[in-house]
Image (cartoon, rainbow, N blue to C red; front, top):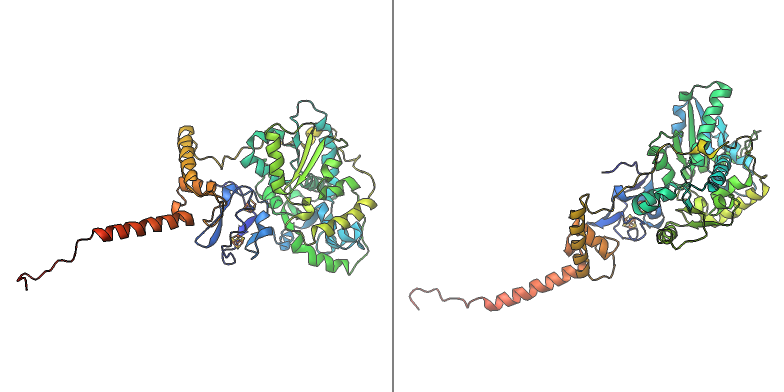
Length: 438
Ligand code: SF4
Ligand code: SF4
């Protein structure tokens, strides 16, 4: 059963079956069979790791076309803080935000501003003794999905606050309706995104609430247009209002750095995140109240939908951070974190379970272990599964055969050949069929 919209897709024609992607997938969601990759949809968390590693660009992210804005009379752009890192340092934030307006938007609002509001709500939550520690940031949708499928025991640690993207979209819609009297249905709010997981979180929110965002446009898809507008500047408005803390959310360590406490940990890169979550599950992480976990290496600046090298983008962003004022959210700060709290809980997605029936699941697990013991344990990936255990699981699930393992296949051929030789020795001599004995 697949309840999610997925933003990461496979272009079968481009796939050469090289198996590069299968070992990098954090949820073992990819198999290569008959020379082509296949994504097991219910396991995929849209982290985009396979997009990065595919040498043939066979994995792609689906986002909305920039043309989608034409479906609305009044169009507002809400760029991610990482957007600023994509352009040369000579451009100010207002240059970039006005260029965004020049490519067809009527209004621009920084998600970095909303990030400061979420930081304030998180600071309040941190002082609440009823909240389970360490709190794990929900800013990265890929990480929340990872917890849903691989770390259900950490669901209660997730910070259940609306994301800066949702907060920004809500503010824009409210402001435009109240100050300009524009009907809600005529306002389209579009997130300018560095990552495919954000697309998924809008199209298929884990909160089961409709998103305030009407479309997600990838930075890659809008970059050239904005660059061209930057080179033909017009008199602009002052849209830049975020403080440095909000802009720093684009970096790994930015969100946690804004909390004003030492007891934080920032981890980026989905495989590093898994190691830290293993530590938390094993109760081996002490003195940490808040974990900022980001699926992409380098944080959102390293998102697969960005255009600039992550290290170059970091240097550029630093300039914007240094130029920005201190936090300026006072007039927008939530009176209580409760204003931002999710109205529903995050659900466990038991996609790794072998069977819903516990007895059957145990039988299957025993069978899996038996099969696994008989496999060579080399985790070579030649069978199209990421490791021998995953192949054993596929065999139990009846989507693969033991002979998909080339070592098993070779053994089987050898056994068959020996059997043939053995049988050959048992074949009776050719009978002389002449009935007259001549
Ligand atoms: S997007 Fe992430 S989870 Fe999905 S198939 Fe690719 S690597 Fe695996
Ligand atoms: S990395 Fe994966 S998707 Fe890309 S060509 Fe190789 S098998 Fe196909």
